[in-house]
Length: 372
Image (cartoon, rainbow, N blue to C red; front, side):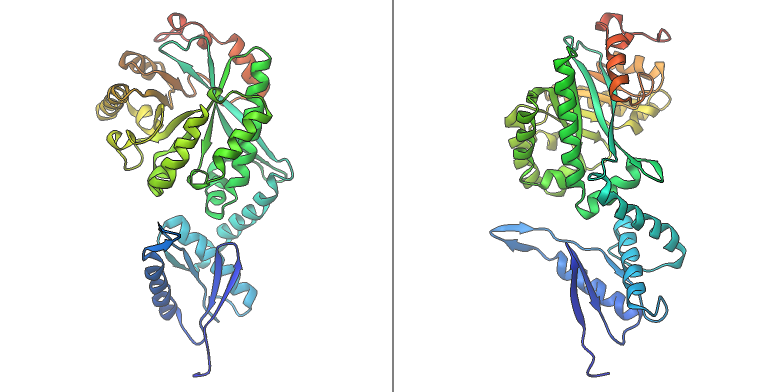
């Protein structure tokens, strides 16, 4: 009726609900797209231009439910579908309800994972092919041991953590434990260097450099023993803020790496603006390079150009002897993958580092078909 008014409410954090009385699905979709257009207009806050976007989920009475709580839950499910598909706005779909409900339940459990000590770290060894100076390397990978679901793969919970902002708590946990472990290995005589992944949200967090520096000091860990890996897409989200944070992290003395190179939209020329030391070629190119000439050309060109810019190159996803042999011939600096080792627990990592043929001098590292 004419006395009906739209109602806006904040549900918490950066989530809002909008009630449109007397409207159908088509009305709601038109309203959603109008809101998106308004959000995407440039905003200036304290002299900085801010890029704001939103994901909108739609549920309609009575087709999608008759209770307020049901409609809110289904609009929430539709919102996460819109985020996942990057489509801006989505209407609740009954076919996705069970799967989406499971994801929302998992998200709720994830908020307790840090407090309940359910996270753990695995370490995947990395091997220097061009002289490691006796240093040892591994990448820290977070795992979630859910009390009833068992081991949950990162791909199932990290995207949710990034969308909701909970990634900050997870990253803080990972940084603290990986830095402490690196220092402990050094104390035990293992010259370890540990790589840690940062998300786009982490890179935009102005408090990250100070928190990182405090952890290094607390655990007596030298900055140069730690490498921080950032995806190229994370830098592209907000280059000005990303570069500012990267410069502060660089000033602390840690190594910086661009992860999954080749999957985004940047170029090596663009990367010259970043204070990074290392470039990791995405495994999708490495896995196919032994059989695909175009993948091999991409890998070779990336290695050559990166070296010309003073960057070292890591190839991830090395799973067979032929790939290792080609990477060695191309002058790749470092490799990791299942041919060398799967991710290991803390104790297993120490045993591997002390006894593996891969940690011997470069001249003794296995060549084609001579893997021990």
